[in-house]
Image (cartoon, rainbow, N blue to C red; front, side, top):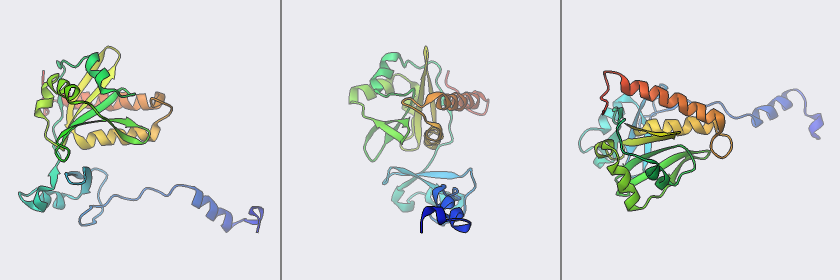
Length: 215
């Protein structure tokens, strides 16, 4: 049968096969309960990943000794350091092709890890020990980082570098948002607009009285 002979239900079936499947609701990775859009995450130190969990499983796995300490609950801190000493020299040492990056302490690797958004997701920039230490010394936020669960989020714009301490899942959320709208080598205008909006909301959050701001 030629393709021209496929009409009616057959044509509809081919159309459905070509179209992407609708997104499936996220479920707790331990008890399989359906999760709301806003839900908790745990850091899996063995797999170097984040897992989606319900409130009950999150509380259970955060108990001392649970799963031999494999899982760690994420912080809820949002801190800003407007008086950091990060300079263009520090940024060039990152050796990344985009204007945003985040760093965190990986206990499995026993080192600082630097990631940045890309069309394929989070990409790693391998820094030498001296460059990593220079970044740590340039902001007071770096000394406060909780391993595996918090990140130092940086953005370079013309004439300045913004510096925040955030829960690490916030950084992966940003990577996912940018991946959906990425065009060209550096993300394109739509990705830049997404970054502008994301960091504007982040600045508002760290400016509220409920959240500590380093100044």
